[in-house]
Image 1 (cartoon, rainbow, N blue to C red):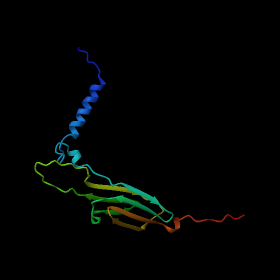
Image 2: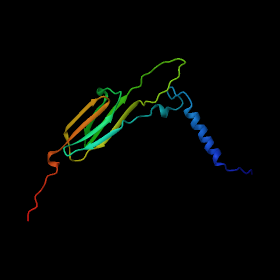
Image 3: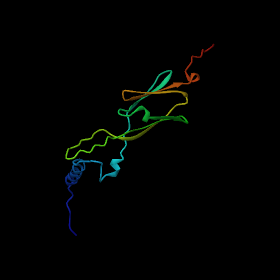
Image 4: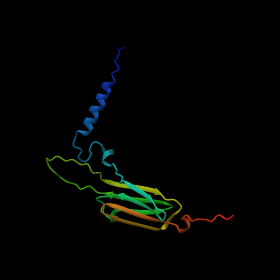
Length: 147
């Protein structure tokens, strides 16, 4: 039985080499890595609450507003869409792609105070803005304390 010396640095070097091999290639259509070719992106979202409404703003640059699906069912607001990739056939040129493409789904559970019948969605300059009004009966009101 042969003894083998434990060298943690060699494991780190192997890991570093594998990472460099993985990211140091022309990805094209992710040929050998089908899991990466179906990678999805998720738009950044801000949620605000005021005394009268809830506001949701989602970054959706490059998506036609007609390609965004907003639904509200059983108190769950769902945003769906897809940013399509532009196929290019460059021969002999290098490509570098950083922008994410693909479909996305974001879901938000709305509180009982949200008025499902009073929702507005508007897209402008790559930002989807949703306004969900609160139910009138759910707004806080002052109750006088009698003595």
